[in-house]
Length: 501
Image (cartoon, rainbow, N blue to C red):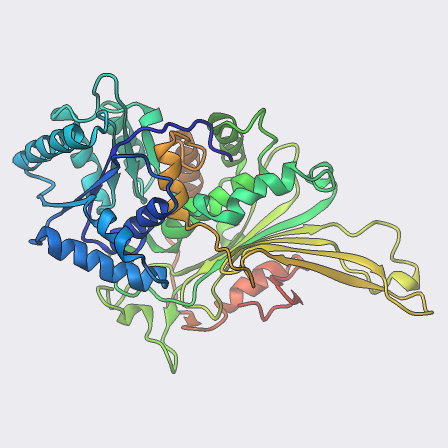
């Protein structure tokens, strides 16, 4: 997913929700890092829009304090002095008309002073209920379509709460803004190893010919967190793990792993193939939900509080903080290959990895010398370690003919001085360069919501016995039974063991 076209144009980068954690911990540090690297165009200016009373210097100082903690490195004083002058704070109520009039006047003033050519990016780092309102107000104030310049809108998740609400939001937004100007964010697509999936698949002839149901036994996507919901209780009560992780991050990873080779690496060609995978996902039924889906919610432990005791969480909440499931991609390439997903919060390990299990060779294991062989496995580690693990079989050293597994392990962010770019650095840069490959197109969202809605509909009358796993533990027991009944196990980096989580 290389940048398709570089546009070395100055622009105004306007952030709605500038006093929130996302802006302070991710967006401004990402923009500053790009500035350090000399990757921002001349005249690039940040307008930080928030609803709180803050002075310009007070906001800049607050951001500086956050950046020192987040970046965890020395910040050049002279460079920071230059950068801080590019941050303009403006108090504004997203619902009030005069706020947009003032923003328009401020943008025009900056445009004239910094020669930003009328180019603007609007980043909506707000609660979802403000997405349509902000875009409508920008449209009514003629801030989205200016001649001889470009305007783009970056929208954070969640985009809708189900298919009908997502469709309504999309219809309303696209009435005011063309699809190619909307950059729907899934920050996982900015991660180094997610982008490496295409390089791994299509840059190595040993993999692509085997990337099908003749040679692959199963696929696992595992994404777990040690943390609970923290101060995001009110948000998480509306989403849960299914909308927070499965509907976006995990299905995006699956679509990249399972997609057909694109005709080229343009954003549209890649997204055309991804959406075909999402279209082919088998919808859930009332019967398959019972056998192929396990959900959960963490309870208290000796160390951690239960989900229901977290801040701004209902005392009798039925929100899922965990899901394990089995699904299938019903197309020619993947028919018959099960896909297993394991995701949740407040578990014993923080990890995101994609595991490709190859089939054992048929008709070879009757030789006693081959009894120690294991199936070949390819593991793509997304976070916190980034890298690739590959297991093959070979003869061990010695006079006896003993065959066993050999592991090849590459970690690209371990023991090196260079760090992988933060996901938001890459996403902001790609939006500047008008490359939409790392962003979600509407039809991708539509088919992912279709799949998720089938899950919700099929479990409408399900009685949820929560909590059903200990905070900081391994997850619900049923999640292990789900995969064991197929004579498979969840993957651990040390081997196929059920002490994964």
